[in-house]
Image (cartoon, rainbow, N blue to C red; front, top):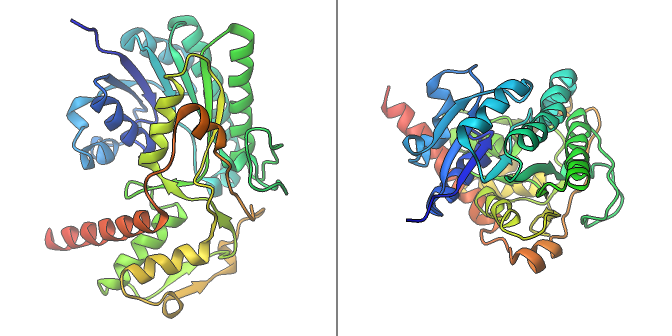
Length: 331
């Protein structure tokens, strides 16, 4: 009888953690998740329940800023693969809470690497790096060799996490890889992110629950893909004989305005009739353009995105309409 592979995921209750859990379960893994004991059970399992897998994963209480708890989690899960997706991941919040962002998003990576090195040294490690690390780069598209220029406390913290992963790989011979993921979305995206903010507003306006959507800067360009595609790239990285860093992106860049227009059009609405640009919502330092070159991922991993931006935005709008109707029907 073949022993099942075991995976440990931090951030398992987030968008990426939920989709990655589903993928790993489909591949026959036992899946364990690190969970902070700071939210209600209803909130903790919402995305896992949405995918119908909440009862199939095992949650372990631990915290990225507490190394002893992470060592205990490694001892309990005995993982073959570790995916570090946990972070304070909202860019706007990183200006409001720079110390928390640094402790969790930067220091948490160091704690995870130390926990793996000490308690699960044969495990393969994945670090969730971010396209925000490129920030103000004037080079486009960006690949693994493009210099970084972070433009937010979140991006600076992610850059530390990226380089400490490289350092542990080179210093201790760990199978540690980073995925430099460009923006990736889905119906499981948090409401604080711009794509979900837009699709939720479209659904509310379509159903007569709202009349307008207040937005910040509509000019930034982003390379948006679907989280389902991107978690597949994470998994493929840890199936390689040698660790490396990979850009994961579609290569297509779209403005916030055009994405917004796409969402409204899917619901038969004109965005110009409902969107109000509010300068108070602009970021202190904006990232104007992000576009990824995923040539290495295509060549080495055989990875290509399968879901178009139009299909993804349509799926998100439909899911938000369904959510709101269900909520209204429930009273």
